[in-house]
Each structure stands twice: as C-alpha cells, then as structure tokens.
Length: 113
Image (cartoon, rainbow, N blue to C red; front, side):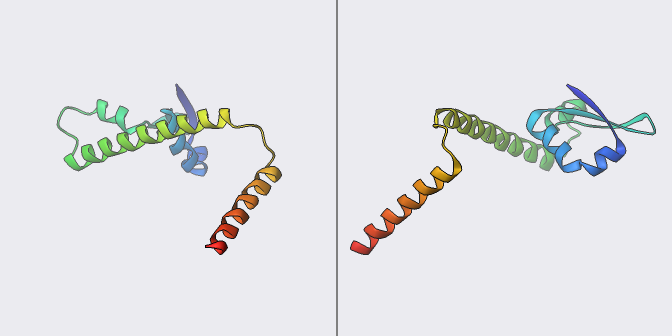
C-alpha cells in the first residue's frame, strides 16, 4: 500500500514514518509543493530496485542482518499476541497486587534460608 504525505508531515513525523515502513512494509511518497520528490520504502524493496552487484557488500550484510532481526521481532510479536489472548482480563490494580504478593512470598522464602 502506498501512502502519500507532504514534506512537512514527513519532517515532523519522521520516526513514526520509519516505523510504518520498517514494521509494516508501508511505501511512502513524499511531495514537496505538490510534486512527488522521494519515496521511502523498506530496504528489501530498495535492494530489488538496484542493478545487480551495485550494492556495497557491507550494506548487503546489514540488510541480511536486519531481515533476520525483523523476522525474529515478528515471531516474538506473534507469540506475545497469542499469549495476550490467552491471558484473563485483569485490572492493573489486581495485577500489581498479585505481583507484590509474589515478591513478598519470595522475600519471605529467602529470609528463611
């Protein structure tokens, strides 16, 4: 999916835009004075645009490492989402009470040792 934004918006929200591109594969077109001037795309898509063997080896290495990290982050996110769905709905207050109770129990057990 392509999103079109103006240069001011790109400047003011650059960090958020990078996340959209990196995490969600978003393609961005940035316009200045209503003219498309640049595109922001995921690095893997950019690599496919370049002629063969024009990408410096260190960039290729970094791209591969980034792809591994991205895949690991996606797997972790999927795992956490599945885990979250299995968790009962508990208020933050009750969760904090349970956490404090567990901490107190551990401290008491350590004192007995």
